[in-house]
Image 1 (cartoon, rainbow, N blue to C red):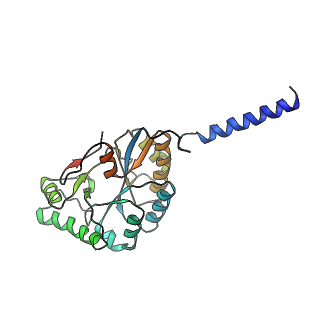
Image 2 (tube, rainbow, N blue to C red):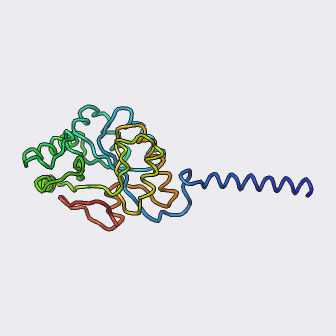
Image 3 (cartoon, rainbow, N blue to C red):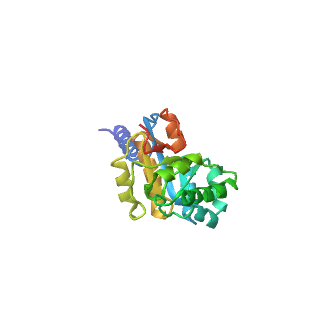
Length: 235
């Protein structure tokens, strides 16, 4: 082999190696159009430090998510509400106190919902989505949610990031189960969840799945979210 041919071969090998690195799963998005969509959701915010890091990471990836916020945390960090809305994220509510609401009477349910709604409406945000803490719902709670114009959003993929702080393990838990139409549950409490969520986005895109908000996913799958309706995923 002459010197010129050797240089051409070396250049080709380097190009092939680089191409392989760029197409390693979870590192880059493919060129193909998405073959499906999933909803990425976060509970329990806002949280100082964590929320800002998460919003920055989502902005870098041009992704909008759905955030289910607690009323008492809105009072702690009211300045963060504008950041969610300005970035185009969808805001839902998670009750006021994060207490389990399935054992409350109608008055208790009404207070948990409307205290939180009032805090957001004061900032010109009117949510239409509600996620009950723990996913625990009674008929009374469902009725009060319907009267408040809220759909009940559950989930179909839960990596349990509230107790697991290993980002790699969280990514594996999601990616081993996720399918088009799924609603992914995560929490806006720890930086390990932020790291995992951003990697999950990259992995989803590598697989041809695009993360969107809950309402966008419903629209894309031809569903209409009804007040009082209960939703786990969108097939």
